[in-house]
Amino acid sequence: QLKKHFPLKSQEIFTREKPVLKAVDGISLSVNPGETLGLVGESGCGKSTAGRLMLKLLEPTDGEILFKGQNITSVRGEQLRKLRREMQIIFQDPYASLNPRKTIEKTITEPMKVFNVPKAERQEKLERLLNVVGLSPQHKYRYPHEFSGGQRQRIGIARALALDPELVICDEPVSALDVSIQAQVVNLMEDLQAEFNLTYIFIAHDLSVVHHISDRVAVMYLGEIVETGDVQEVYENPQHPYTQALLSAVPEANPHREKERIILTGDLPSPANPPTGCKFHTRCPIAEDICRTEVPRYRQVSENGQIAACHFAKEVVAQGT
Ligand code: SF4
Ligand code: MG
Image (tube, rainbow, N blue to C red):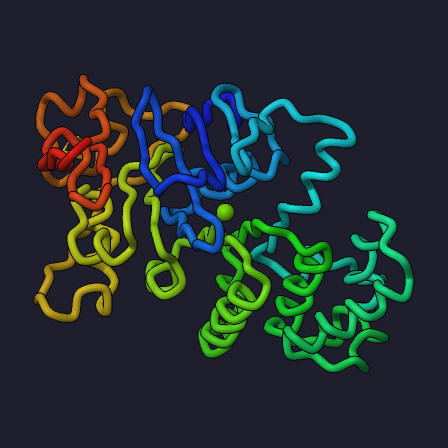
C-alpha cells in the first residue's frame, strides 16, 4: 500500500557524474561510489521504504532505479539474483534479523553458499570477516543470544559483507544500540567502508550520527525529499523550514550560533492522506496561503548543488550551467 503512494519518481544509484540532483517531477537521488548518503527524517517518513525500493525489495509504482548506469527497475530472475550480491542491507535490530537457531558461522557463510562460493573460500572469508568486525574466530560456534547488542550488529555487518557488495543500505544500524556502543559501530562502519570500498546509504533519524558519517544528506518528510546537499552545507545552512527545525534540536549541529529551538506543532499527518500543496504546511512555522494550494518545486539553494523544496527558499543560479 505504502509503495503505491511512494512519490520518489526516480532514484539513481551510482551515477558516474557529479552528484547533480535534477528535479523533474520528483527528485532523483544519487549516490557516488565510495560515498555515504545520509537519509534522515522522522519515523514514518518513508526512509526505510526508500531503502527497500533501491534494493528492489519493493517495487516502485513509478520511476526508475539505476545502478551503475544500468536501469534495474524491472530486473528479474537470475539478473536480480546477481544484483543481490552487489547490494546488501544492515537492519536496525540485529537481534530480529539474525536467526536464533543458526550459529554465527552459518549466519555469515550462508549467503556465500547460496552463491556457490567454494567451502575453503567460505571458511577463509568467515575468519577474515570476524576479524575485521572485531570478533574472534571462536565466536563462530556460538548463537546470537550469546552476544551483546553491539556484537550482534557486528555479526549483521559481517553477514552483509560476505558477498563483497558495492552498496550497503544501512537502515538505522545503530538506533537500537546503547549510546556508548553507537560510536564504536559507526567508527567500525567507516573503517570498513574504506577497506572494502563500500558505498553507503545511511538511514537514520539521529542527525548527529548522520552528520558524522555522511558526505551528502537527504531530508525526507512524508515520503518526499525536502532538502538535499553536501552534509556540511545543509547542517550549517539549512534552507528548508523542516530541516531547520530538525537541526535546531541538535546542539552540536551549530556550535557557533545560539540557535533557538524550533518546536514543530501538530502531529505528523498520515502518509496515506497527506496535506495539499506543501505537505509540510500543517506544521511549518512560516507557512502562507500559497503553501496550502501549491506544491513547491525544488530550488537550487547553493552553488554546490544544495536543493530545497520550499516556496520561500532563496534560489541560486548555478554558474555555467
Ligand atoms: Fe513551509 Fe510553505 Fe516552505 Fe512548505 S513551502 S516549507 S509550508 S514555507
Ligand atoms: Mg525505518
